Length: 102
Image 1 (cartoon, one colour):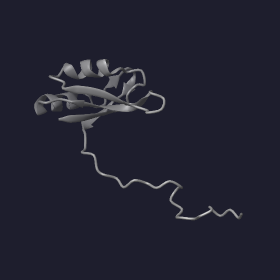
Image 2 (tube, rainbow, N blue to C red):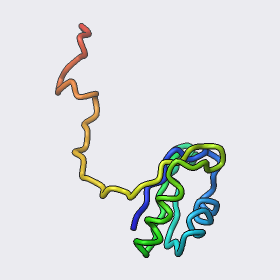
Image 3 (cartoon, rainbow, N blue to C red):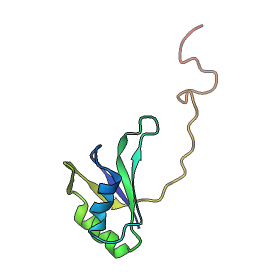
Image 4 (tube, helix red, strand yellow):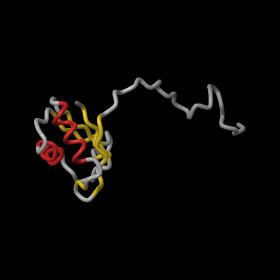
């Protein structure tokens, strides 16, 4: 089961996240999503646990609990949906000058 973990402290490490979930069973992977430009935590991550019962126990125990001073949001991750890519220019349409006169 893939588990979403939100509202994470910016200084929580992936190894600390993994250790927190290993108290409930086997952890296949634990990752914290980072900003691609700054490398800083975006405040959420994912933990993958192969056993559904262990994963559910972790969700039940950790949702709403404090992890490094922040109340964590822990639930089963929803599958990614394909979002249409946005176009550059703020969606004003082709050739728009945004009300400016040239």
